[in-house]
Image (tube, rainbow, N blue to C red; front, side, top):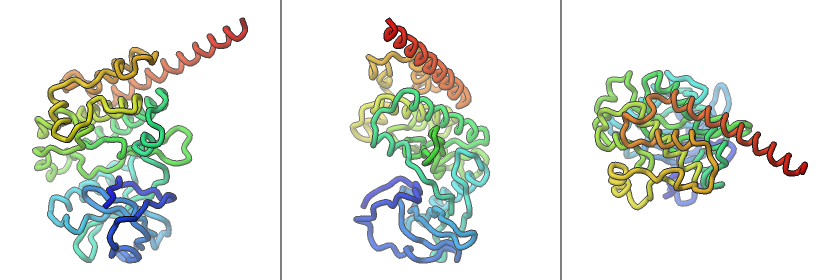
Length: 320
């Protein structure tokens, strides 16, 4: 059975080969949402394209799996609904409704996005031009600075959870999937603080060793891993299996960007920024996402200046 990221891409149907007959198709949820087709499947639920009765229009519906009736999974969907309701940021998906179906499962209705994830962009193009990679991650850092300011730590930042809207000239971004976020404003998140939660390829060392003491700097680490991947097309830690990656994360330093891109003439500030974002020692990392965003904006200015100098140099050579 295919496993797809939890993303609603209204204009791009997802393949459904291999999926069993879905009893929700062509049915109504809460008397207001007509389920049209399944778009994807994630760890906690299924995502559908639905038509809202009023006001009419397409929406994304996330429904918990049949098997996930335990309280913890219901709480995670409730957490995501609560976080989205409170955040209401330009960088997050708009929540339309949270409720319970007749069969006991819970659902959330969200705005339907058109575009693609950063993961899809990576799969299609590989390593990105430096300025575009830095710009995407700078915007993600600004988004997460606003999220952290409201007491929410994502804990699962990765390319499939960053979405680039279609038709936007500057890679306008949204952060997806707050299902395992740590919400410091909610009492029921206390139990989750003791569990290892996240995606092994992007998880911060402290999420493995001291998950009960994770703060926003864990998200900074994950974002640094992504920036490295966008620049080089590969992760700074070799992938073997989950356990091997977790052990390497604790014992080994990541491959430096200078080694992964030896022929690239990049600003020293970029090397220093990436290195500081993915420091194993949390105390040596940036203190906040706002600091990360500021550093990356400075990198973009240096890249722009470097391009301008290169253009002048090319012009002089052509004139001579």
